Image 1: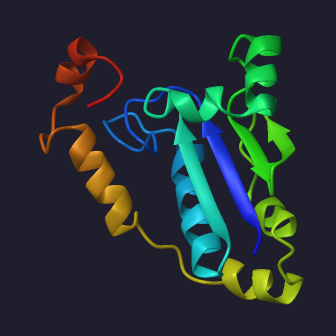
Image 2: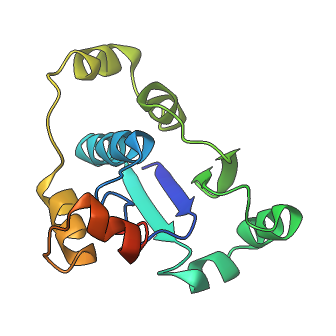
Length: 145
């Protein structure tokens, strides 16, 4: 079984999908990683602010961090090998890394769009403490919530 590991930059919550100003790339990535899991791919995701020990324990990640002072995050590894850094790959590229059949990918790309998963919604609520804040409150509270 293929394992795709994501090393995210520091974010306010595990997926970065929280608050009122959400980066669409993070929404797409979360959906793509959920899709990969549903296809049987093992996915691990570590955030610098939440799991710094995972970054310190990996020689490749430590070297990337040293070379770029952290500017090359996110980093994507497949079965322990560096595949991409400083960018978010799309579903097709992730599927290719996982050795997925192109026909299976075509079917999945034609599936209707859906909102965030229950896990993603729970992460957003946990990050924001279950409180929905206005845009003006966000300005004083920082980027998260």
